[in-house]
Length: 128
Image (cartoon, rainbow, N blue to C red; front, side):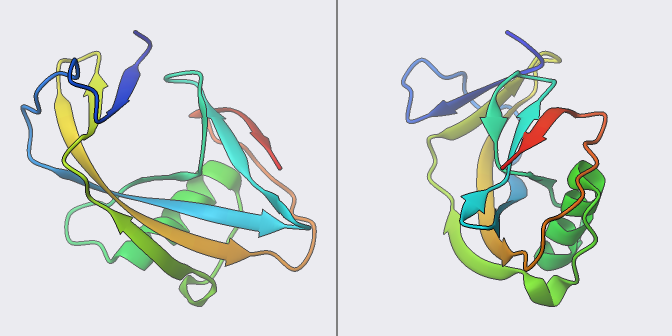
């Protein structure tokens, strides 16, 4: 396993040993394409996003994560909430032994012009 392994309704997934974890992800669209991030910790492609910290507002969390992971500074008003994914079978397991049930709030943002992307240290690559 890399840094993390993710499971969806997999009967072989480890049982959570931590409280449920609230995360945010975003569909960032530009020119009819979606932005994907290839993460260093697990070498898989996914949507930009991350965990909500403490009592942080979800929209502030996604704006912060987008800035950290892509270098894009978008106001919270640019994010439209799409859906909440809270199925009990969404599990993340980390090398340190922590296992979380994941609850993800999905947002959408549409860019009007071609962005200049700056991948974070967590990212191998960003690509539309």
